[in-house]
Image 1 (cartoon, helix red, strand yellow):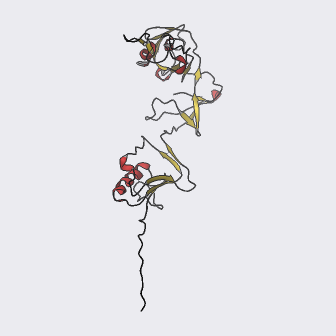
Image 2 (cartoon, rainbow, N blue to C red):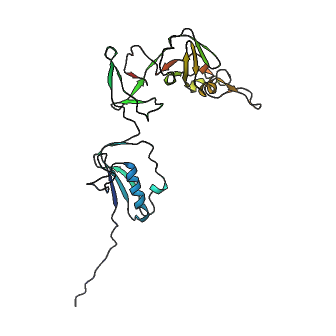
Image 3 (cartoon, rainbow, N blue to C red):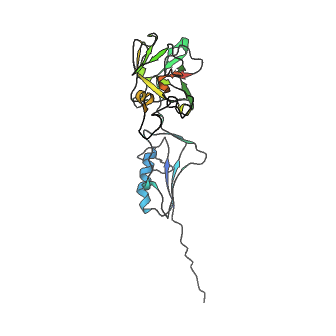
Length: 261
């Protein structure tokens, strides 16, 4: 008599995968042959799979740029559990790039003699100090003020109205480098620990009005009864002094590649 023994082992449950590619479609099922296009769609698919998952869920990113209009938020719904993990990873040899940057297109040569190029700013691009060209951050235009300044309650009075013709004064920032860092002197403060920046609000002739609340926060001192000295809200009150330089202002002929809004 022959006795047959059948050994049945517990097979590991199949792992789940979601494939993403910038060239995919969010209406696709997220397979290797038909990937979805966005990380948001991949996240939604993972969330629907997580409650019943018994094996790892892996999101594979193909090479390319994944542009985000807002931060990609991952919370407890996107986490694994005791019986599985959630993994976001690149496909072998792929180099995906997740970017919150906004593409600026429509560049035209505005002034050939200065090699000056311009492009319309996208509506969602606001208050940025960063512009990347071919992956390298470009520096904003930077220079010294063409006038002398005297501080007022709301800003400065210039020695001459040379800046009155500048466009978009709200985009121009005054930059103040650190002071003497004598912490025991309220008029000096922790200057070298700071680099305050304040934008202009408007220019009328020789009168320069600085933007609020930056100006007041950076020029006023506060004193509480239990304190033995004044304290600066921002910086060493150096914002009232002459700025070290200005940024995003017109520059006649920059020596290097510069940009401004």
